[in-house]
Length: 602
Image (cartoon, rainbow, N blue to C red):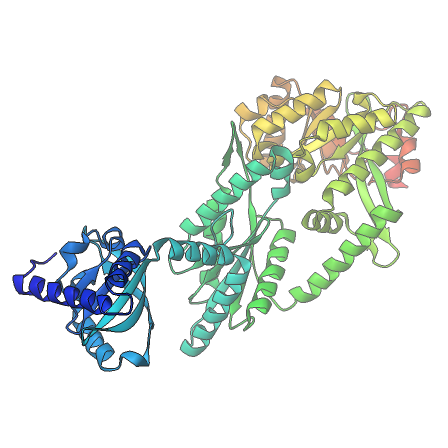
């Protein structure tokens, strides 16, 4: 606070006394003066009386709470000493204008003003001004209120309206507005921007397997990683659920946007820590450019959404750039989804069964259940197409339940006919992450009166390695029920031997990619021999998939593979046709590599 000059004190005292005399000369005399002073003193807002020169002549007690200065210390000081340094000059002009035309804004409000507190920080205030005559002298009455908390609450409400409560990211409504503005800016400046729609793969499995609290923690971490992967000027938003959008305000071309998308995938590929486990979680990203692909927010998001679904159907954990043909693909996907819902409710799905030949004695003891669907509207729908739509639309769990139920029913039927055959069922990633999967399996077995050994469940190497701790716990519960367990597509994932040996398993299925080149491809042959030796060390059986020739069968048997599956034996067949494979050994299983089974030759 600047030094107070004696002449200012004297002038202020004179004005104060004249104010008191003026009030006292009113109808109520001295009591009115005391009443006026009492009202000013008791007012909850800070009140100042300022003369035409901008000098403070009266301050109430509330002023100290607002400015840090005792009221008496302010008397005689210029009001601009309470203002931020940059406003002092302008304030003098305001005072002059106010006193020249005081009635043009009686009790007018001055928004967005700040006072300088004694300790140096600035206080936002709301100010109302009035004018009065004191002993012939015109004075301004200044009412001031601290609006720090009010503005904080208003900002909190604005933030709540424009941001996601869980992650703190921009929400859908605000994204639309920011995207609209960004499109306008690019159109005016001749630039290009991009929308990246990020959809987490298999997030439902996190919620189902670990609970919604854990799922929320994952979403918060996803938001953090996305923000850390883009520029400060770029916008990261959460649309809802497990969908996020990154708005790139400026990119050179589609390739640049795809590079950013790849960076996002890399950030999300790192495991997420949940309690005492680490969970792998991928994502699929759709890219749309503006103004190239669309010029309004809704259309751009639709384009990015179409591209994202294309990325999922291409194998997940990938990036796809929007193309106009994707709209037709979406229409087709919607039709498949609708018909699949109808088939689940009213029938139309079937299971076919592909036999596995035991190379030790030439008998079929296990068949793999494979989905087949011939829809009256769509015709024959490829299994991969059906599964992809089910996974992307949330139907994969009810579809998996249906497959499990039908497989158990068929196994019971075969056993009633004397065929002690085991049925193998593939589990989707979403199914495997269900916290109650063991209970679902046990329920299906009990409903059909089956022992656990009548059922084999197959999971992929990638599923097992996504969360080894959870995988081990689930597999242990299933094994305790007597259920047989197989690791499918072995060799295509990223499992380590240390992790593999801790998984409770019965069988390893060697992926067809390593069988196709046998016996001519030395690398494939070495891989198969290595897997067979590893399995023996771990006391696991091996099943080779995709076997098509007798030479392959002979080679696999010679190198210790336990069973084979593929078109050499049979494709997946309806239940009544595959039943003829049960019973005595096939007549050609001891034959050499040139033998051809009669069923194939026919």
